[in-house]
Image (cartoon, rainbow, N blue to C red; front, top):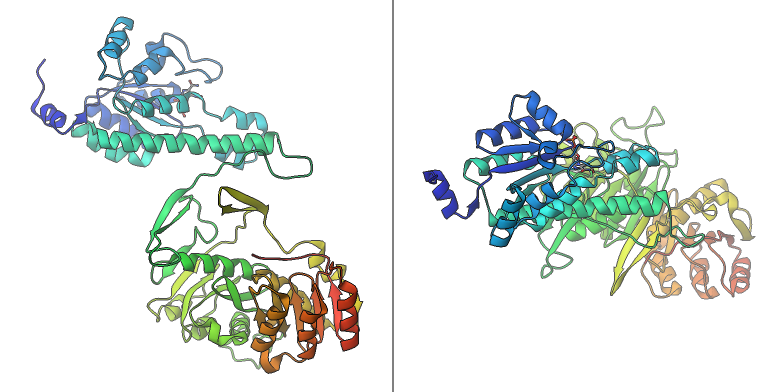
Length: 545
Ligand SMILES: NC(=O)c1ncn([C@@H]2O[C@H](COP(=O)(O)O)[C@@H](O)[C@H]2O)c1NC=O
């Protein structure tokens, strides 16, 4: 038989012809178009159980895999393709005469194409299915075939993603798949089985059983996989290349945020937006956080005194706009070029104010009608919607390894003022207690050492990232200016000496909340007593490094 003109052209391009395909897919989307197209391109189709049934029902010729193996599918589908006649056909390197001779002597035809997608293990686990049902959805034969074909990409093209079918049919019509594409497909295939195995191994080691040490939530192994979502213009600095990774199908959190307007997100935008989003979700009720370089330059919450409650209020004003104004008033100088996060819908009134301020990013769960148009008056502001989906644990790379810790949620007993200990002074008034509770939650968003001053449900001075608590207190007081007298303060960790506290007392702070637990607590409390300052101890610490 002599080659046709298109076949000669295809061979000259290095295309490997597709003569025989094995198709075994759980997700049948696009299957009939694929089978019809492959058949039209002259490809012989071998297929499993219900995949073969669908193809045959569509009137496309198909060979059932049992006809190839001479062995029935058995054990409820646990054994279908796990047979030397399948795997020899997928693994024979047809460049090698010894392999082709072996196939001939065993009367096995090679496969040029494998199309497989796997049992939906992750979706089954997510559905809350029983352990037996989850185990049943661990695909064994599919990954075995994918790995075999991917290893043998010199001879076989392997497709695991149904979105590739139209492309595959084009290749079939053009005479086959070139080696460069077979290599790409093989890499995709191994990533696919690797991600699948990470999901199975994580479930087996964390849910079905656990090798964590007694009292510890951490398993003996962690696996994580991520795909490139976006190449960023540059990293933290212009000379650093950077990209965003994650699960492109996961629309949660800041990595999965939707951008409604503005320039592309930068590396620093992502870092700051994540910090802002987290800060805005550390509070119940309406909260707006403004972040710069991962530190707050203003956080505020609704206290019930905002516009909207009183009929005399300006109808064009509202709670979230007022909360944003309070947050912005903390440090307008630093808020220039900041990132704003609101844990509630952004109103047009808030959008009007924000549109007057140079802002890098604004993120919220939603925007009132017209609010995005108002924000979009500024060409560059990035406007995002996102969902709040905090991970239970956080990974941080260090040289030579990774640190893993539980997320620092503000839900410890010490985060509830009802569990605080009044160490000295008069019990705080209800307004002061509300401000102390707010300050305590807000200081979790500040890089240590953190001292945060608050009044009226808003930060008024933040001292962050200092290597001693005295300087953090001085910075907070300097930023608070004439608003400090009568305000309240929170310290993210204990005062090791009275000096840091004394900076606050000298500036007129009326009440302080801190974890306590220093060997010099007594001296610190005595200093508070002398100064007539109310001091509460939480017993909980909120370092953020
Ligand atoms: N056990 C086997 O030999 C086997 N071979 C292929 N599969 C899987 O069976 C599914 C297709 O089965 P069906 O054509 O019956 O719908 C595919 O998701 C494929 O990955 C198998 N099933 C699970 O391991």
